[in-house]
Image (cartoon, rainbow over all chains, first blue to last red; front, side):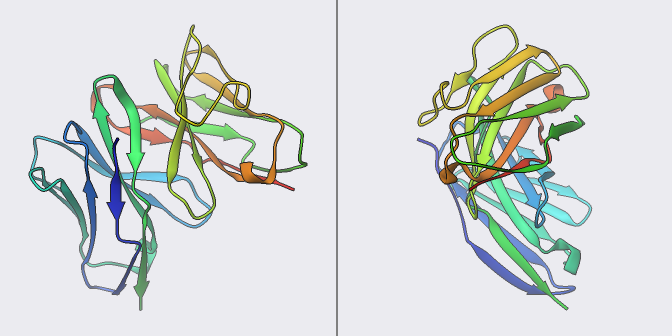
Amino acid sequence: GEDVEQSLFLSVREGDSSVINCTYTDSSSTYLYWYKQEPGAGLQLLTYIFSNMDMKQDQRLTVLLNKKDKHLSLRIADTQTGDSAIYFCAENAGGTSYGKLTFGQGTILTVHP
Amino acid sequence: SAVISQKPSRDICQRGTSLTIQCQVDSQVTMMFWYRQQPGQSLTLIATANQGSEATYESGFVIDKFPISRPNLTFSTLTVSNMSPEDSSIYLCSVHGGVTDTQYFGPGTRLTVL
């Protein structure tokens, strides 16, 4: 079955870049997503990438996809204290699994002043 | 983007009772999804709710425990039945964004069972 793995913790200094990594096992994944969850809040969709892309950039966010290694990363440039949150990667296998996401465990990002 | 609201936002319930969670979307969608996030854990799909047919449940989830209604294309309910403390979780409603292939989530219902 599908499996998505993330490192659990990341600590960075304000102004530095953060890189959150994710690996997945389902080679039929069509879309991969990054969500942000702040304490006590719901999930905010940050960005997503289609499986035929290598990279997607959206303001401070850069998503890199290595489909051969089934590795996904999210880079946050100029990280701010407001970026402190839990970041989840998720895959959508598409086809008959349309709309069903498999989530990683989440990476807790802590940004220090 | 889809705007999703859920009611209630949080509740504290007694063991053995049931709670119905409502999900409202601001546009018509074919499929709605219910997820559970247990404390300190990731999200797990409970079931897919299609309008006009029975919900499809994932492994480990059954209709008797989590009955779902889908009366129209903008609304769904999830009931957590005969609750126990192990049901304490955040329950989230989700919809697929159609042509953009994005997946949106509601704010969640934080349930505590005593």
